Image (tube, rainbow, N blue to C red; front, top):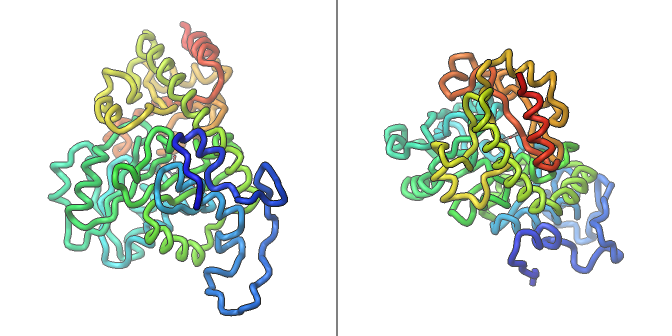
Length: 387
Ligand SMILES: *Cc1c(COP(=O)(O)O)cnc(C)c1O
């Protein structure tokens, strides 16, 4: 029997590790081999042949077990990117003729896939206001098969009514799907709330070092297995070396995310008080409209925040010229703090009107708080915002 561990810190280090260890190796070795010898019996199923694309080398298997343990879910798999995980999951849960309910303001790649590609598969969707469950029923169709939400939505850090999404899915026989990238299993474990599928860009907090692209699907075993078989066909497999880096990064997940929770809250409070700042979006702030829901669902408010400066886009550009620690770059969730202007990066594909509707001004700055000392980041922001 697999040993069980009570705390996520211990799971991050020990869950899923091979027993016994390969040749006694303390760190999981990299199995840099495309294929493995076929067992002599010869009647193995196609999906059981061991091959990197079939996501079943020792590196993939160990990661799957660790990921499932982190979210107290039945099963998990890794994929070559967050988008490989998301698109493969959607294309497995839905087929031609099916309809999806998806919250407004999803990750740019997800939004673009659903709005631009769905029609080509004969699938349809409706956008729902994640914070207003009363309005969802009006969008339900006989062909609706799934509801899709994000734990914390980029870049205004909105929090949908996650418990209502699970209840709604159960009541209407839908698959409940959540993108849990921004919260990570440290702050939110979807399976504990009844979600069927949790999706991750492991490029972000899971790996946490800004050095690989990877994805994960975590959830009910029967669904994860169907997604795995589809992933085997679509080909989004993670290379063993990237598996190794993800595995190594995940060992410090709990330490990193807890530091980022504390640091981001302190930075959000600092910005909230600063006269050059017009508004701060962070669900940990009491004044934030999503605070109550976030406090109900999450163990921490995460490392992501965004803010508008009084001087708009010009003031943001000026701050970017002066700031020293955060790197001006897209993406998030790693040890290095990053800053970006979503209107120019993640939400560039939206029209200006679409951006305005979801609260993204041209000068909105998003910050991914890394693991630098909080005081150093605050001092850096203070001097970059000086008159
Ligand atoms: C980055 C991101 C993705 C896409 O992940 P990739 O690893 O870049 O493919 C999906 N969802 C969210 C919330 C993200 O931040």
